[in-house]
Amino acid sequence: MVLPMLVPGLFGRCLGLGGLAVLPLLSGCASKVNHIRTGSAVVDPTLGLTVLFSRALAPGTGQGLGKDAADCVTSAIANNAPKVRLIAAEQFQRSVFPDLSLESLPVSRESLVILGKDETFRGRAAAAGIRYLVAVGGGTDQRAPWGDGTCRPGAGCIGFWVWERDSTLWAEILDMASGESVAKVEAEVSGRPWLGVLVVFPLGAPSFTETWACHKLGRGVVEFLTTQGDRSP
Image 1: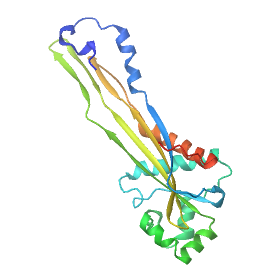
Image 2: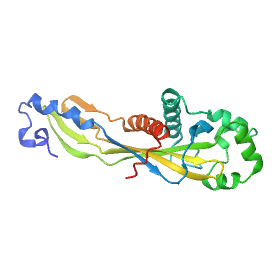
Image 3: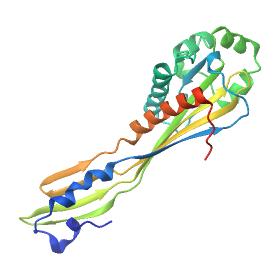
């Protein structure tokens, strides 16, 4: 995409306002949510579930993004799915791993398979009313910008750059009785933040793809839990 403002021969001419009017549209986000069944069992959320971010379950996810995703899913369930029995992650830690901190829980896919066979672990989880663990994770890919710019003495600078930014967040429902995955919800959001310079005036628009993906993920999990929908891509 090459805009008239980037053509050196047009530098110094009047730039029509119509060209600038369309620039904010570049930062708009496109999104989709996928519901993927990974097991044959039907989730009964009235049995109790906990939303948890764990580096062991999502090793490629940053701490801040993981916690935000867990908060989004937890809030969405609490506000929109009253029939779901939601157990706070802190209560899960106190009930099942009372001697450990929330950040140091030995929760991974491998450990859940082993723990699911442990009578002490299963007894503590059952006593706390927890059957499912909703693990969250994800990440963002922002590629190098494309665009160009030019400056001339006494006339200032004109330039325009666009980034392609993709964020994907996921929530996977794990059955703590068996350690097996039951379903996965993925929220994918793409945006194009941009930056322009018109003489000495900077113009631009960010694209909050992670925030939007977080919101979409929470809604997607609620929709799955309340409808048990299966819309695998």
